[in-house]
Length: 103
Image 1 (cartoon, rainbow, N blue to C red):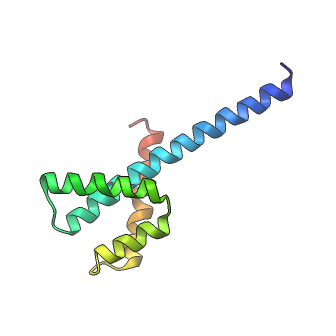
Image 2: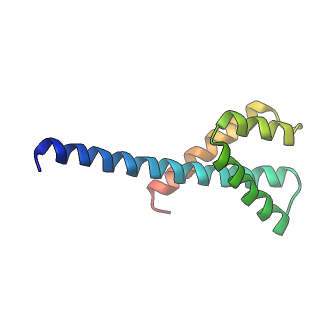
Image 3: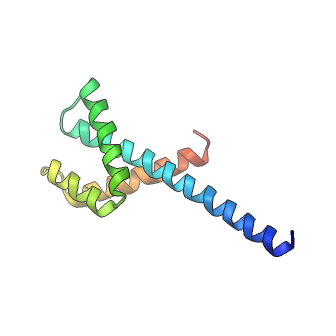
């Protein structure tokens, strides 16, 4: 195996690792966002956990932040789109920091 092949395989492994971290951070961010949205809707206990799980499942299928924000704007008309986007960013930063810290 030559150096070029080894280098190429190293880049591929690094890319796969980075993509896995992004996916985990996005999923964690969406779980936090789902919990926040559920609480804003007045859900508690099992209803909140069910809403959060369903929310995460829908966001994995959609994979688009624009659709995610649109869904929340429709579900939470009393909360502005700007505030929803701000929470999305905050939860994203928290999730990424937690994963980097190994939590």
